[in-house]
Image 1 (cartoon, rainbow, N blue to C red):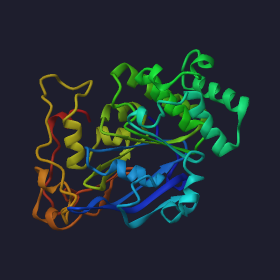
Image 2 (image 1 turned 135 degrees about the horizontal axis):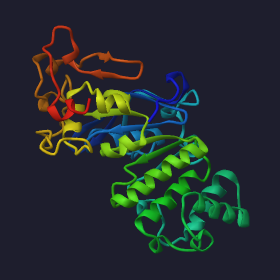
Image 3 (image 1 turned 180 degrees about the horizontal axis):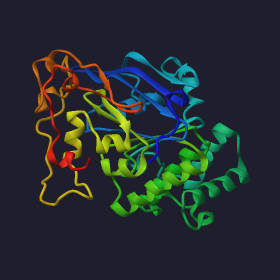
Image 4 (image 1 turned 120 degrees about the horizontal axis):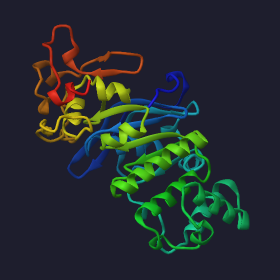
Length: 345
């Protein structure tokens, strides 16, 4: 997909975000200095394995991490020129829904099984827009039609269990879009769905973005979803953003060994069938005692001594593309990506 406007058109900026959780075992450092921006009308995909910190970063934008044990250790989340992390809970209630909305992986965690879907949509309209009665019901029907649910006039009266998994996810998207938010955060929105329904939901998100201009943050571990949906990609590992670029740059000119590993471990449409998938050995770093240097050092076949003790600076390859890796230091040995990845260039 084409790259949109430049960084100066950012609707959201996350700067050096550091989020930890207090647990009985100690402090879990989930996000360790992550920075990224979201531009108007674009889809930014944040990708990485489970435990990379991507969902915690996304929930931090909505201030949805559990307040009892969440520790904000630093950073800023700038929206409309102000730091969300400094807002009161009352102020955040005016942002969640009307300005920033979120779609979760399992729609049943977002829907009340005892309440008709029309009423669940209407609740958001009443709370944030003051819309009541027949007008709220009519708007709920319009939203169900917008997300592609047939017979919306009848289905608005039904309960969540009367919808399929894909249709329930469409209902959740309708609720999220009810107040025309500027930003939609989709956290693994298609993981629990079969391939056909997954494609329908992704098509729907693209259509809605084209129609209403919402900026989207897509949280996923599925690079196939990224290729068909996103404009830009932020690769996250060990609580840090380790590479950022356009979809084309990440897929065809990746510069970070972790990104190479992700690409080598997935089936690609034009890959030679004789080239086996290459798993990434080892496990993600322990967030209770994260490494001082590059978080990927222990699993990286190109790791050097310097990687263990010091985080590399960013190396810029284009206006959109940078990676944090010691391999790009002038004195470092040359590292080549796996054959499967080189073949995609």
